[in-house]
Image 1 (tube, rainbow, N blue to C red):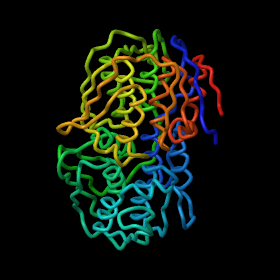
Image 2 (cartoon, one colour; image 1 turned 90 degrees about the vertical axis):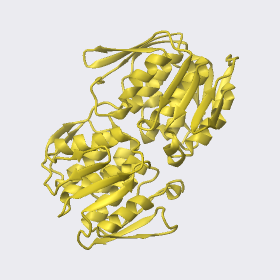
Image 3 (cartoon, rainbow, N blue to C red; image 1 turned 180 degrees about the vertical axis):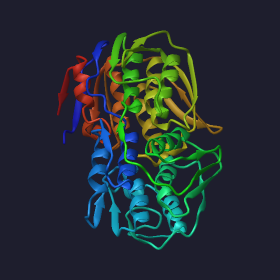
Image 4 (tube, helix red, strand yellow; image 1 turned 180 degrees about the horizontal axis):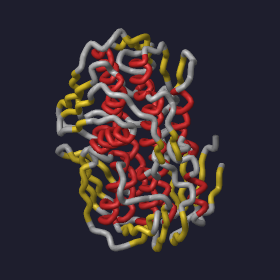
Length: 408
């Protein structure tokens, strides 16, 4: 593994992003649902992200111990899948994974009839699924303000339960687009979901094998919006992107209109160019938390005052992303602080940089969010290999746009 990569400044960009990955979120859901159909579906254009490779490898594994490494989605989806299937498996991961809570999902599965034990610390991985004694609850309540992956995990196994499942959400529901994505994909496999404001109803049904082509990933595309926003001049083409998408991060189009990026459809591609930006930015990220890092970097670098809400889930991601942003944005002279339930970003008045260096905190999105600053200065990113989690050819695509890179 390389210790760092240095990108040499390039302020004018023109080209095609050739290796934009397909959606990791859709791919991982499709793999789980296909497994519930007996693995008879045809899944095309699956993501090559490490998370998806792990999902595909582990879903059919007969090993007694399944190591999901740092893949939170894989941990949660496999926990529900193996619990309901009655498989005896230990599911574990990295040290950071063992710090990421899973109690809400385990509690829900136990109430449904699954037998699950914790291997180390109560409420956290590793866990051991040991059997399913029959469905004991057709209805569950679950907090709506935690990771939507808990909810999606339960939704996907619901049709195979003898009594189906009704999920009632307590409190505010965050990341709703991911819940709707799950329902939409389940529908492609022949299962009907009734998604209401505060609950989801899924009757006992049978999934049907089908053919699914995975669309390009909007979360990955967001970094090229960052490059476009910060460059002096930019025309960047994103292949296989459509404005009509079931991915919640498609909202980056509207965000970046405020921050100085124009999006135009060109056949099956999307072309990004620069336009004037607004002096202030305000957004609720509760339904699209993965965009917060990219947007905060753009605001800090362009001198745009920002107000962010809905960042609560960032504390339990690959790292504590709030802390990581506070630390790294300081290097741009920006301050990022909480006030009355909102996060305020105040950029520095002086934004001239010769060279910059950023830590990644074992977080792929930290690496990719700060990389667009190479349009303003030479930028060194520590531990660049973290991007393999969601975008294995990210650095290759950067060099494809003409950036010179030195790997140490």
